[in-house]
Amino acid sequence: MNNRSVEVNARLTMANRAYYGLQNHMKSRIIYRNTKTLLYKTLIRPILTYGAETWVLSKQDGHRLSIFEPKILRRIYGPVKDGGKWRIRTNEEIYQQCGENDIVKFCKLSRMRWEGHVISQDDDDDLSRRVLLSEPGGKRPRGRPRLRWKDGVEEDVGRLGCINWKVAVLNREGWRKLLKEAKAHPGL
Image 1: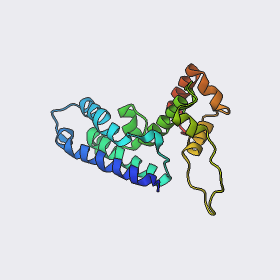
Image 2: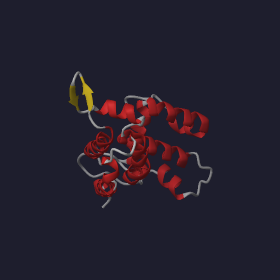
Image 3: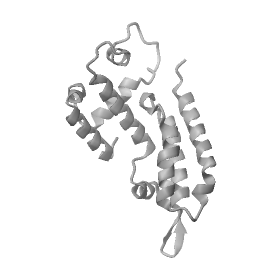
Image 4: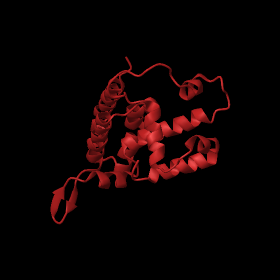
């Protein structure tokens, strides 16, 4: 059985272990925030997002990921003094300070980048390309259809307003430009 939540749970567990292994560094007042942010971006986030190109994110999985990342970034950036009182930073303030997109958007961009890579390959015998472009036969079972990777990517590209994205992928510079726009797009 292909259960996507098992992989997300395993990645969350491994990233949490990496975080607690670095906890003394994250708590340290000697280490600068920029260094702590760099530790997060180079050590913890890659562990969390390894293989994210292949994930079909449900709302629950996305919610769990979007809880984990601000928890770490709040530890790095700490509270802010506002009008004489200390308060916890909002997610928007944290991501603005960090200079990165949230983790769910990062995973969606990774999926789109991977699909663009597979589609733009010249080799028609490549297994990943054949699987992506094939249409499975048979009937789907009764009830709500399961989430499919392809449907999620097409929905994300559709939110960007790209109608015929398979043609856009063939223009590499145009596809890179679209991905750059997607990074700044608020609705993705």
